[in-house]
Length: 212
Image (cartoon, rainbow, N blue to C red; front, side):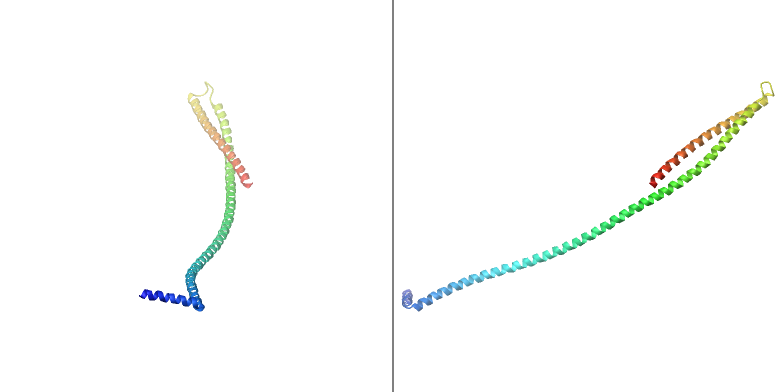
């Protein structure tokens, strides 16, 4: 019975709406409003989603700007540090060149002083050795003269006693030994003198080379 009454009520409202334009317009307007309300709800949800997305995008942009600012700051610090390192490198290179030049100058000066001292020492030695060689040459000449005198003093065969002849021969033998020793010493001194002369020539050559 209720279903019948409900169906009858709908039928009557439909007939009334069909017979009254205002009722039909109100019904259409109500449907339009409902559709607009649903559209607004959909748009509101979409707007909220978009607002959230925009907010997230803004936060991402802020983070990106912060990272960009940090990168710029770090790049500026790196450039400043690189400039400082380049300046330190240039200063180190200048100090290195100065140290090398100073070291070369010191080595040259020391070499010159050593060479001059060595040359003076060798020159003194050469003077001493030349004096010694002259002394030995004089001693050698005296020895030869003495040997001639001793030979003159040896008695001829049949002259003098055998003891005198033996004594004279012994003296000659001693003189010959001494003469041989003097000859060996003179030869040694000559070799030493030649060595000193070669050493002086070598040092003079080194001195000229260093001076150049």
